[in-house]
Image (tube, rainbow, N blue to C red; front, top):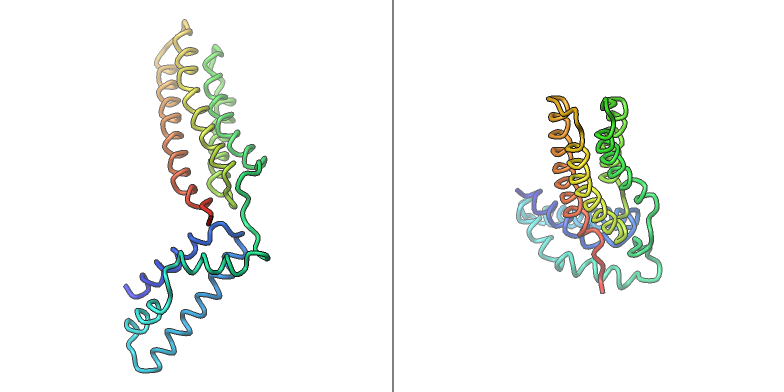
Length: 208
């Protein structure tokens, strides 16, 4: 419980400093953490219990939003910020891989034999695209915009897949199973994209 209050405070501070580059944010968080624990140890040496020392130390600091705001204001000229509007072509390639993987799986329905090798390639593209998007750092507004396009591309695959499916004259249990798996992948991709959007959106919030 005692450590939780410290972690919560530091996490809030980290979030408020999210407009800074990773290295600058991490350096400041480390310096602040060292200062905080040094203050806690001083208060424990004065006779306070650990719980009292933590509460007293945290109460000496203003809200994390105020700390972050003051730090950014006082170091405005030397800080490096995450980009806000610039095109991030690397991220665009990563996000495009997701849609390309789904399109590859949809286009298999135009073939007579449903080439499982090409299906595996599409599935790998889909999985690796999601992994690279999740692991992407230094998020900006262009990244968020691209994820909205990923969602549009994802749902476009649904009517396209159904169109190709119902045009087939050789529908059997295998193709029926395939279209159900494809629909499941599309719905799952939608929820994955929404989850990423929800998690990453706060990271591009900037002080006015």
